[in-house]
Image (cartoon, rainbow, N blue to C red; front, side, top):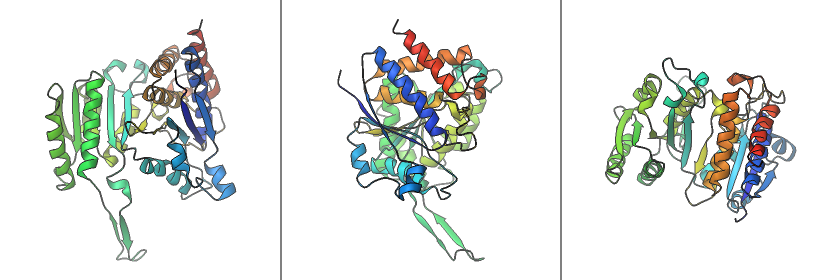
Amino acid sequence: MSERRYAIIAGDGIGVEVTREALAVVRAACAVEGASPVLDELPYGAEHFLSTGETLPAGSFDRFRTYDAVFMGAFGDPRVPDMRHARDILLGTRFALDLYANVRPIRCLDDRLCPLRDYRAEDIDMVVFRENTEGLYVGVGGILKKDTPDEIAIQEEVNTRKGVERIVRAAFEFAQADGRHRVIMADKSNAMRFGHDLWQRCFREIAAEYPALESGHYYIDALAMEMIRDPRRLDVVVTNNLFGDIITDLGASLQGGLGMAASANVHPGRTSMFEPVHGSAPDIAGRDLANPFGAMLTAALMLRHTGLAKAGERIEHAVLDAVRSGACTRDIGGTLGTRAAGDAVVRRLEGDRS
């Protein structure tokens, strides 16, 4: 088995704590499979920025491309109020590596974590494909007459045929490969007539290439309602950058909160980046309260993506067993701290070796 190399950037706040536990389960799961990945821990984050004045050294993105994948913990520190380091590291990596597909599995692991009356954990199992390099987050716009009564702020949305086609196709390819049945596209074409007309046309054209898969459309507000009203109807969802950002956090509430949410930032065939989505949570940093399971499930996605699928599956099964056994942190009904919850998963993985 060829050696896998991963760049690890724990970042700030609870990112340091949850990354520590994620790396422990990666080592344990890979050991069971006879793999010894290289986990290259890099020091970038608020501490590095405050002590050196640099967010990332020159050439960092080229260096990232030499790894099989990059794992990032979380970024954000009140000592850096403009969050420039987070922007440069996190968003910089997404754009520099052209990681156009943000993939967010939304799966509930236990009935007690499901907040919807009359639904069970098994009813919540969808994957959202969010376009990750276009839309409203590209920073096109400006402010005129700032701090005057006549101030004008303009924020432009960018949609390209290339960008829309490739994220829609990625959603269909995933659905086909994963044995799923339906792909939904969400937009606001009834109000955003130009950019989202492009989404409509691209989606119809690409859907026709996958006749074995059902396809459908929701306006984004109707999709948000459907996620709460009947999540069983949703399988694979593809949408733009802003809408995907919003509905995936709504989805996290269906799986036990942001502490359970994993994500991948992917360009197939290239170095991709993986991050839990809960943020740095400085108010609980260093208090052994953070839920490490989202980081572990993110690490499992990373292993699956880089050819260590069995190790990734082992992590997922171990986390599932820990959740259902109550060996977890307080936010999802347990009594354990961050480190003890991590140890509980490692013990389950080490048990696989006996």
